[in-house]
Image (cartoon, rainbow, N blue to C red; front, side):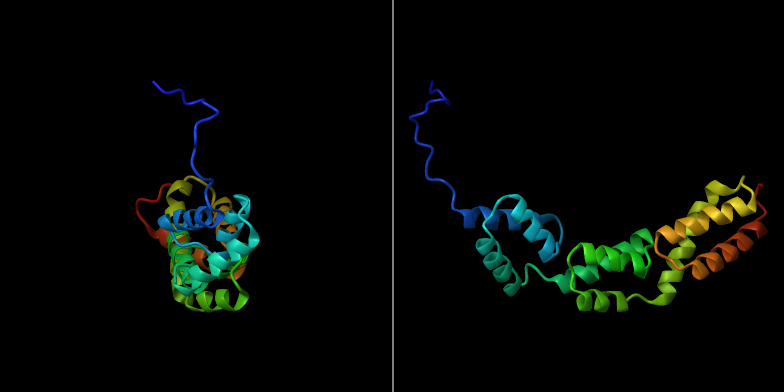
Length: 176
């Protein structure tokens, strides 16, 4: 039986930093798309030399594995439809992801204002179920606050909340 702690044992050549960086990038891109900024940060965190990181990221962009425009569109679509986030919050998130302002604006321009209203309505409807025992003013305040945290302007938030509360109050199952 061989001892694994033998100091004279040949462990083979040290790994090439470029191979390590390539593996990190491929691992990061396996689960989902990522921005170039996020990938560069991950490489820096793993102490990959800057020149190697830049060269590999440039190559990955050339072959289409890293595409900030596609990433921004996908991010906006998923976060807007899935979480009901409005343009303002999505723009902040894209900035944090290191997406260029022009690229981010192109992705944000694809959001239909009606879709934004529909997602705000859906959020309010879902939340209203748990607020049926509350006073109307308290429910309004909480619902408007929720929409504000999602980035919806105050005027839109109040409009949607009032409309949905009016519909909910007409519901014969509404128990206050």
